[in-house]
Amino acid sequence: MGYSGARGGLEAILAAEDLVRRKRDYASAAWASTEQITARFRLAVDRVMGEAGLYDEPTAADAFRQAEGDTLEASHLLRAQRSTLPRLAVSEPVDPGEMTVLRRIVPAFREPDGPQLLGRTSDYTGRLLERPDGPPEPSPQVPDTANGADRTEDQRSPRRFLDLLRTMDLVADGRAADDPEPHDITRKPARPPADRSAVLAAMARSESGALVALWYRSILGPDGDVHEITLGELRHGRLPLRVRHPHTGNPVAVGEFRVTEAEAIEDLDGAEEDRTRFDVGYGLCFGHNERKAIAMANLDIANRRFGRNGPLEQLLLLTIDGLDSGGFLEHLKLPHYVTFRSMTERKQAMRAAAEAGEEPPARAAEPAGKECR
Amino acid sequence: MSREHRCALLAEADKAELIELADACIADGARVRVLVGPEVGCVTAQVREPVLEQRFLLGDVLACRAEVELAGHRGWAMRLGDDRAAALAAAVLDAEAQSGRPRTAEIDALCERIAARRERREDQEWAELAPTVVEFEELT
Image (cartoon, rainbow over all chains, first blue to last red):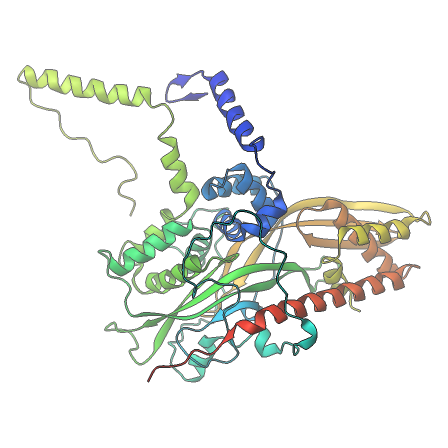
């Protein structure tokens, strides 16, 4: 290897890699198949897909196994895999209103259109650790379809709470007549000031913990951007993916993918804002990842209100990508012998100069990149 | 059945049922040319969000596509995932159905089975979800 003036170590690196492989793949435990991982660790798989920006459960599961359960490392593997693949198409614009909901709650309103559907959740369950000795008893009885009524359209894709607020004329309408092309952050890095499409895309594939931390900072931190936030609606479900058929020119569905969607309602109270109405922030990410979607929705509205006047837009565009931040952190483990020797020699030179009664040299400017704006 | 509807159903088919029927389609010696080899890549999911109705790119979805010519008719298929053989077989079935060749009725029957299977799966899904519908009481 070579970094910062260091070279060599190939045999040790290969031995270390082999140690990982042997301990992982030949551990004295049953092999964790791809199906095992997608079935039993679905939230980790979903998180990896979202942070990598590539949706495919088996591929993400393989990355999770190879990364020994490290979700950020798995996202790195998955994004590296994606970089080898061609783009076959850009889908027709997906309408999230088409979602077949698997879970849908409206915390802001007791009786929205359509059901409040808890779905698969442990939100309301006490957190008591289970320590089973082995696999559970044979599967309990699954509800019988023969006794159930058909699912209505309202139950499948209920009208969103935002639309109900609109009928009550309670939402500030920021919809524009134009329809700009979305920014593709995978091809062109986004820098402030950026289109909202770039910020939404950056949040959609951000590291979940980084996004939640940034949201929490906006609540309790020094910026004071967000307050009086209400979660309007939260959904998890399936959306159809359509591309244009190359022979007929018509849209054709090629499959479905799961997403989590959130709408955050903001109480407008600024001097130049419409204080008779609310505004709404939007969050959408791959898979089932409610914390991420909720944080995204809150930060979307915060960024629209305050992003251009403070650091928020820059933070969203430049600091929440797990591969960026994690990669920079991980690189600190590489040999920095030359860098540190240079720093040491500067210290020693300054001490010698001071002992000789010389004036210290002028302070150097901050390193490049510290002042980003 | 429209071509798009058929393509959508074939995109949900199991690999084995696609390959079995595609093998039957070409068993009469019809000339097959692979125009676009089965290729794994990404479809970028473009979303129009409902608040400001602006588009943004959510991320990429793994997909595989193929295109063939069978007895002078072009067939195309795309499905999610990375199964090249399934995509190629689906493209053969698309071409067979487009040309009105002998296996067209079997392809339609397969599509009907896939649609029925999907309906059963969704019925089962709703049977499991419906008991979780909640009406919280409001404290006054």
